[in-house]
Length: 316
Image (cartoon, rainbow, N blue to C red; front, side, top):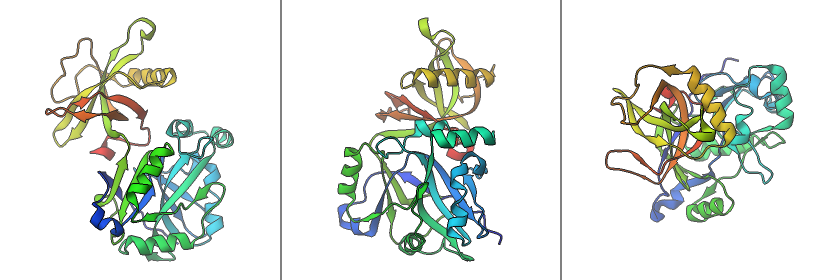
């Protein structure tokens, strides 16, 4: 059976819904991993696609038996994570799995850093499109599939207790919550206000446009990254990020920057940064920050992670 290609619905950054409407919302733990649409034709096979639509099935061989477990045609939405010793999603661990092209290496890494698929929506089932149904009905159908096992699960959603749920995630060291309006339909490819992601720190996806070499022990490595946000006319500079890397991440970035080197500044207006070197604006990263200046620059930015699962077009 041919399955429809469905782009994932995206959440908008924000805060908890007002208390007087909290019972109209469900709250799910925000996972720190790689978004995946899961295609199960009903013949025992499984196809995984990233947020951009690229097939990533071979990267996660331990997840491919899901199709034989369900045995029904379906398209499900979820997040692929790697769990730490306390059962929390850890993006840094998952990065060792992402982008692998060798089936042998993927199988070996599946033993060392097993992936886990967190399922949170059903958008197609048994020949029927579900995107027009309200969240509550889709969620009931998803939970009815009974998909809980070693490599996948369907965590519970909490209705009407957002403040308590948010505090629980803070105490547990989790990233935050996603609030979902109970009556909302599934909007493929749309960043919707019906889904609100609430993080314990402010973060933003940025595009790397340049870098400044480090000094001393950091000679030859990036001392700071020059980052921007895409808009219709180009790339707007939003700041210089000089903290937050591990030595391994800094070395990885150095190689990526070397390969992407160009002579001209990719930003709309060249930032006045001495010794800046420019790169093709294709690397996407996530940055933590405290606030923004009136000009839109990030205050106290700190590098959080490289996002190899995203392309610049994914965050415009």
